[in-house]
Image: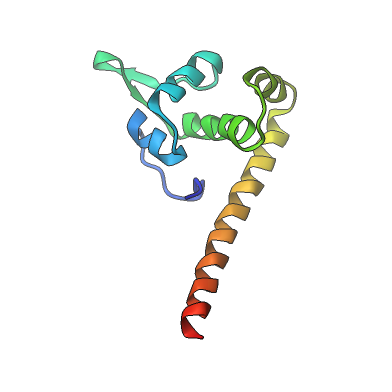
Length: 115
C-alpha cells in the first residue's frame, strides 16, 4: 500500500507506526536518522521516538530516492542538498500515481467480477 500524504496525520507517531507506513524495519529508520539530519524525531522519556509530520515527509523523500529510485545513501544526500524542492515534487507525483493505480486496479477487479 502506498503512503498517502493526504491522509490526516496525528501529532506524533511511534517508530513502529512509521515503519509500518513505509513497510521497512525500525532499524532502517534509526539508521536513516543518523545519516539524514533532516529526520529528527522528538525523543520522549526512555529515548522513545516520536515522529512528527515533517519527519514523516522527510522519510518519504529518503524512501523515494533510496527504495524507489535505487539511489545510494550518498546519492540521496547529494540530491536533497542540491534540489530538495524538485525531489519533493517528484515524490508527490509518484505517490499520487500509486494511489491512482490502486484505484484503477480496484475498478478493474470490480468490472471483472461483473463479467
